[in-house]
Amino acid sequence: MAEGKPTVMIIGAGLGGLTMAILLERAGVDYHVYEKYKEPRPLGSATGINPNILPLFEQLGLLEKLKAVAKEVASVNVYTADMEQLGSIDVRDHAQLSGYLSLIMSRRDLHAFLLSEVPQEKMTLGTKVLSIQQNQYGVMIRTNDGKHHHADILIGSDGAYSAVRQSLYKQMSTQGILPKSDGEALKVCHMGILGTTERLDPEKFPRAHETYGHSGVVIGDKTRHTWRYFSVPGGRVCWRIDVQLKSTSHDESDAFRLSEWDADSFKLDADDWREFKTDLGGTMGDLIDATPKECISKVMLEEKLFETWYHNRTVLIGDSCHKMLPNAGRGALNAMMDAVVLANTIYEITSATPENITAALKEYYEIRYPHAKLELQGSQRMAKVLAGQTWLDSLTRSIVLGYLPKSIQQKNTENGLRYRPQLTFLPQVEARGTVPPLPQMVSKRFLAEQQQQQEQEQALQASAV
Image (cartoon, rainbow, N blue to C red; front, side, top):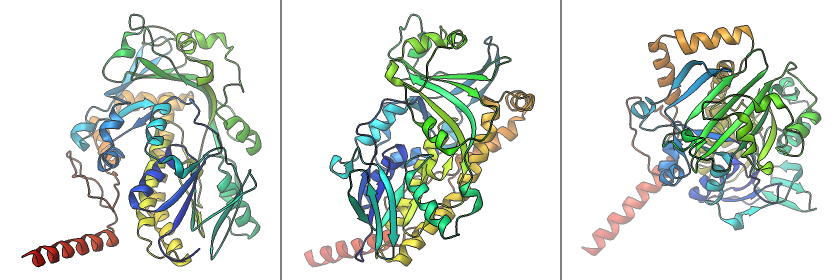
C-alpha cells in the first residue's frame, strides 16, 4: 500500500468491532467493516457497561444516548436455590469513586446503538473471511464471495473462534514462530442458555419495571446449574442459565460449532429448569416463555488469554485474543478498551510504513496485555463467586460475600476503577470522583495539531488587526 495515513479492515461487527469503527471514524482513519452474517441477530442477554469505559462515551458525546437504552445498577444480589440471600455486591459507591454508575442493558440494544453510529457505506455484511495474506506492501483478505480486499492494517474482532486469528496462527505455526500455548484449545467452563424477554406484566413482575436495574444470581443446590437475571428498559429481563461442565477441554472444531449463538442447536426441554426460582415474582420457566424462540440461544463459555495479539500488519482485539467468562460484561468491556488503545496507536501513524505499523501494534499490545491479564484473573475469581459449584467455590463465595473486610473490598474496587482510558486525539473528559484515573499515553500528533491550529488562529487575529 502507498505511504500516508493507514487504511484499515475490521473483521467482525460485534461490540468490539463496531466500537473500533466508531473510534476510527472520529480519528479520520479510512476503514471498512466486514461481517459474516447478513443481518444483525437478536441474540444474547445482558451486557454491563461500567466506569472503566463510560468516560469514552462521554468524550464521544454519546453517554446520554447510551443511558437511554440502559438502567443504572446499584447492586447484584446472590441467592441460594430456595431464594435465601447469601449476600450482595454493592456498586453504588462507583458514582462517588469515579463519577459514574454502572449500566446494564440488553446486548441487542447495545449492538443496535453502536451500529447506528457507523455509516452503512463503510460496512459489508454477509462476507466471511477465508484466508489472509500479508507482506511489506499490505494485507489482503480472501472472502467467501470470491473477492479480495486490501488495506494497510487488518483488525480481527471476530470472536473466540476468530477466522483471522486461525489463519494468522496457521501461518505463524508453519514458520515455527507461534508460541505453543497459542496452539492449545480454549478452556471450557460452562455452557449457557440465554435470552431476553418481551415486556413483562408489571403486576406479576413488578421488579422488572423498577427504575434501577434489578440483578439476581442464584446458585443451584446440589446441581451444576446457576442462573441469573437482569432487568433492562422496557420492562424486559435478560436471563441466563449456566451448566458448569465437568470437562475443561474440547475439540476446537466441536467448540466452534457449539459456540454459534444458534437457537436451533438445542432444545429447552429440561423441566427442572422451568422450576428454578427467582425473586422477580415468577420462575425461570416464566422468563423462558416470555422470550421469543428466535431470541434464545446457546453458547459455550470459555476462557483463554492468547500470547500473540499481532504479527506484521494483523492485530486482534476482544474475544479474538482474550476470551473471558461473561461476568458483568467483562468480555465486551475489554473489547471496547482494546479498541480505545488501538485507535490511539493507529492515530499516531502518519506514514503507513511496515516499521510504523509494527511499532503501533506493539505499543497497543504492551499497553493492553497486562490489563487484560488482570481482567482475566478477576473474571476467574468472580466466576467462582457467582457460578462456582465446588466446595472451594462455596468457601470463596462465603468469604467474599460475608467475611471480606470492607477496607479490602474498598481497595479492590478503587484499583479496578482506576483504569479509565480515553481517546488521546479528542479533548479529554475531566476526571471526576475521588479515585483519579491512571495516566495514559499522550498523543504527540494531537498536541502538534493543536499547536498548529492555535498558531493559525493567532496569525489570523494578527492579520485582522
